[in-house]
Image (cartoon, rainbow, N blue to C red; front, side, top):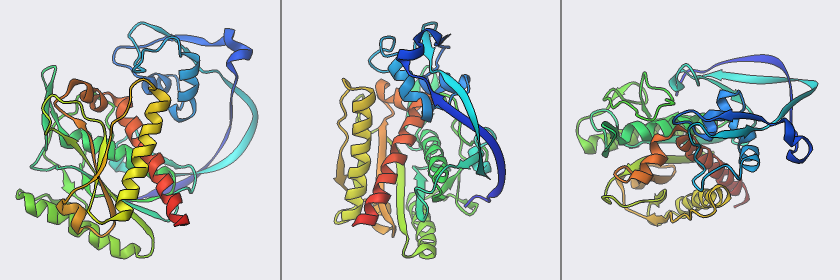
Length: 338
């Protein structure tokens, strides 16, 4: 697990939304830049997407296309923020170099996942790039895009006070706000262990690493997520789907909770899109042999142009991580009631 440095800072803050009906005339108009999504545009103006995304959709509902993508040069409204009476609060910040310089400082926002333990595995890595695709002359490697989503997910979980083990790690990539992620082979297994050339040995290495850590957290809520990108269906669009090991009721429940969360989010943000993800059982080595309740996630088809948008657009990768985080919070809460 990454070494953590924690320090405390006191800050003054108070931010409120002002309703569209009261001050519509005061909205700031901005132009979208090339390749920019809603998350990127909001960050450009120092607005946290987690706080302002829904407001942005509401005030720009007549300016967005059905896929909620921004068009270069088109004008959009920014949500209004008003400073009010200052409120002093104290926040904890952790430093996690694995996320890269831009994202290494993580604010612990709440304790929604206090006591929960997660094992995050990105598909393939090291000598095996996994599925590969092509776009605009760039080679796209499964392990790079799966890893970026894994890092974003891990960072989200830490914000909610979870214990997170990132099993496959890259020493120098971090979270990358780029469409085309450079392929490399320098990934390592947690503990600075070289990833074997042999496919079976690679699987065994992941399983053994997870199972050793599992013993340290007996009695706690523990979940393992393995994230991949599909390529089996040539030129076929594939929605995010999930596998669980046959007979694992908790694995099935985990997959169904994540599936429902994604379905609800698509219905909220893209009501005309539809979502056809699935939760099915499958006999896979890592699902069978790792001790924590597990789900195996396929993000899409790396050989389909629409699925590629889900992968290469930075905002989409962040949205996937955000939605999975919400689903995991729900699963954790549900586990307390079972």
